[in-house]
Image (cartoon, rainbow, N blue to C red; front, top):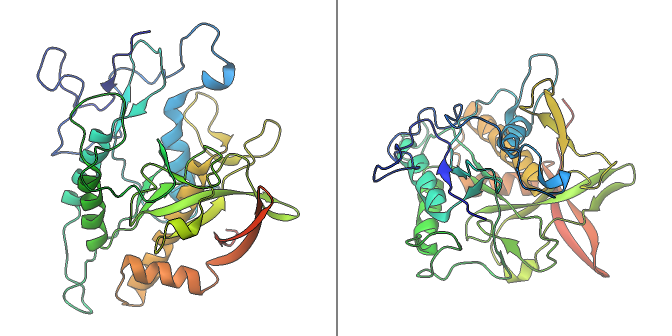
Length: 332
């Protein structure tokens, strides 16, 4: 089955050109705009289960709504006063033989474009600290690693194309963002791993987010979320957040959707958990700015850990009790 991926960005190069299917790295304007290929992402493969044939292009809309949605009628995300900037890194199969996918080279270029757009602006408090009012969320996931994926010279995980960036290059991109005061959040992955984290959450410095299921009995472990052995990821930040049950007939996380006549939809996953944390960091950042406090990623993480923004939860992971830090958000 042939898959001929192309970018779904409006600025993609024409067929036959050296950059056919790709978009310029230097300009992220309108990168989240309507695709010239159309938004029909339903997988057109015979005998494909209905669950795998859904409109895959709705994922980013759903995630963005959790972080910062606001429909003006009381349906809001975690940080409804925040704005959303889309950095499009997905590629699309026009033949609809496969769902949209992310190549590590496009992830690298997306981080690079974001870092280039977020210049260092002096703080009125210290004259040196960055004043970028951005939080970067990555609700994507690939291969699972049981330790940080930090072998600096190794190629970034991919089975699709040659010439991918090294893990070190991606780590440098994340470091650049953090030095500019930008928290980088990533979904832990939906592989049901009890030891590791999916790429890119496995990268050092990334704030990793697993999923919990909210029930009347309290927070419970979800069957799909990756729950790492924290001792194998020393000095790294791992939170759990609401991600939905992930089971048919049980509630997911309700957020924005793009299907005609369906403005809201329930979905589950660590993709849905991550934007809860991204929205929380946005709110903490706003509070720091209002109080004229110096904002750094480390200071924000310490604040969330030390205050009512999170709480320890103990979950049963295959018969072993483990304690993780769960974000705790107030109702609107």
